[in-house]
Length: 53
Image 1 (cartoon, rainbow, N blue to C red):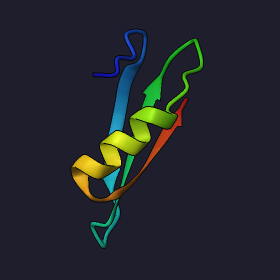
Image 2: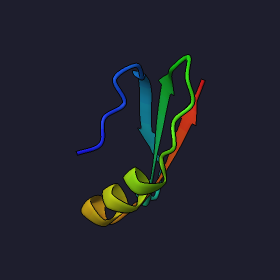
Image 3: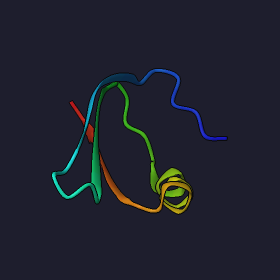
């Protein structure tokens, strides 16, 4: 399991069509989400976007 211990979730929303999910989070450091994105996308079967603010 991938962990991002310093990330604080801010908000999440779904597009009107329900096909895309947007996640917003805050963290002082940068993360490499490549492996997480591949794994999570397979589990939820939808496109999603991560935004660091």
